[in-house]
Length: 189
View (cartoon, rainbow, N blue to C red):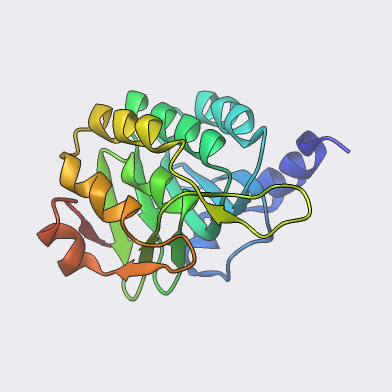
């Protein structure tokens, strides 16, 4: 099954009311029709999500990117982040929601990073899973992460904050702590 039919159903039924709704299931990307136009990225980031995001961003060029989820694969997350940054889009974790791991890397790409009341951003070192094994911390992708975050305008200490939290833990940050650590964040609305 391709992702297109699923996305068409979501796009036809979705409204910006998503911002007040519960998080969607894993791997859903969709345009939320409303003012402003929004693209929701919810659930686990998977292979191919960057290509789906590219198509959605073309249909909604000034989108607000609404993020919720536990993370997922780093490579597609960084590719989505690069597209967000290149287009100058804003990123949002809505009120009461959380965005961790690969999701937080996408959120960092926003030219304006927004957090709803009670929203949480979680960081940790990158990890990789081998078939049949639990994910293990890896630093093999750290150079790409550092390069990407530098492209986004972050100082090296922001990257250090991410990679120095063990991959089995999540360091949750609120707006005050994010701003104090060089990650400019604004409240939403």
